[in-house]
Image (cartoon, rainbow, N blue to C red):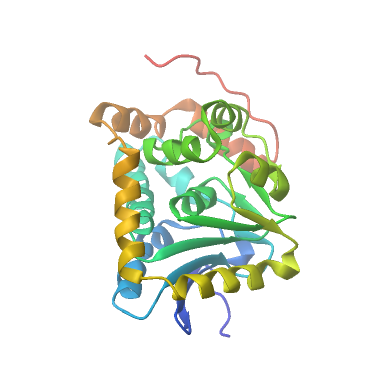
Length: 267
């Protein structure tokens, strides 16, 4: 394997009838840069050009992290720049939609940290297989921003309204077994058993009608009657990138200290 680029990348490989997307930036716990987010839709399109693929497994390089969120330096670059903030949100939204709308079954292989934007990717997948030693969290409120409507809705669908509120309001971290109890992941096994569990599941998928699976994905999406984010709500999220709280959240993260937020209400 070649050495990891500083900016990171997302690698596409094929293992039989399984496509594997590897988030590869181990020096930063696989945090996703803006370019990495932007690369995801094209990679998903390439997967869908292979008719024999029955599943897409998304994983992090190594076992330290699935993905520890968005790149904090990209957030800093977006401070007080609405255009940069919108570009950042658009890139994340496009990446999530490409995963959620993929015609193949998508599986997140979660080992280690699955935080923030990493969890957004995992929730966009059809299923989540985690190691018991994984750490998951939804930390936007600790930075002074908010998840998108789609990510928030996915979290509510998985864990229910009350648990979603708790996880989002507190930004607390949970382990694999707790995530399984809440419904955030579909399987939690020892790290040594994770790959076999996914391989066995993909083997079962291969024996089903792929036409019916893809149709079922469409039916499920329709049955859930998923809402569309309004322009007004989207603008509030863009505005948060120009807010004092995001600046404080980023600085506190970089200084490894608790943030002291000053904003109190939406105007």
